[in-house]
Image 1 (cartoon, rainbow, N blue to C red):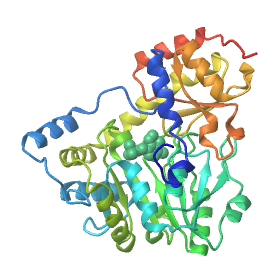
Image 2: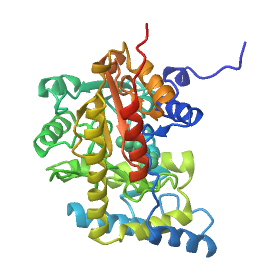
Image 3: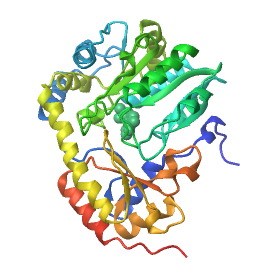
Image 4: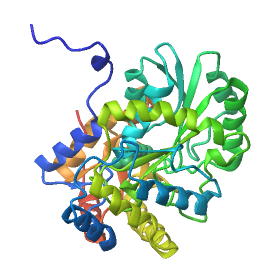
Length: 390
Ligand SMILES: Cc1ncc(COP(=O)(O)O)c(C=O)c1O
């Protein structure tokens, strides 16, 4: 008999995305599976990271975040949303927004509680709920515009609902929740006394005039929202592991305690460097969105030409596709064939749904890649003639 492991750890599987990355490396593929940029971060951030390290900012920062970074986060939030947060009592810097979400749910949710999660979802939310002993209640975002049925959302709320997790701009769909949709969520949160936990990590990556609305900006929501964001996507530094939560003092106090005992703190010199990023001028953010728009304009039509039906994203850097034109029985076999025979890695759609059948004919690509990388992927996709399984 092998060593005993917790029941909890058996209730979710290994990340499908990281498995695709391993397969991609084994086949020398172009990785459009795991969503991290292959282009350089801004020099100003890298220089500050180097400076801080050489200046021996190498010991633990204050557990809830270096003062300079908390001040920069609050200043930027004020500029983008108009909301005021107190850097002393309402900000927690964590090891990425991944840890923000885990620390927040562990701080808010008890075993037996329910957490509402929109699906298709970013794959961490289900396991995060399970780690708290909570039950996720899924609400479907429906194609082609990834809208939800208000009645279904309403039915997901009840006496046991403690939190709702909402990710906008959304991974994997590219949906940007409208103000009207967020109003519906807010009304239910107010009615049931539910806390919203928003993952806004793609807040600056928007297309076609889409506007990002933070749920916390809606009436009565600042006090019942934990707003999570981070440096990974905005500054192309996914390996730095710096993210942050903004919440009322009472929620922040609980989040800070969990965070302290989980990780103590995020990397100290990198917190200094992210503070420089937050101070970059507006042009940086406009350029960021424009560069991603160009990548989207390049990849999405190429996917269509290669036989995929695409759901055009309005934000974030993913595109969900329909593979039914290829005649494969399921997405996992298709994704394996695509990486082994076609040399391009993508993520099977079933990994984004509680009921895998819902994603059997879906595949997600990301386009956080240099033009040359995307050109290589597009050439390979154009040549890809999958052998249908018998
Ligand atoms: C929706 C979403 N949230 C969070 C993360 C992870 O963010 P971080 O690097 O800040 O932990 C990702 C990364 O792909 C993501 O897509």
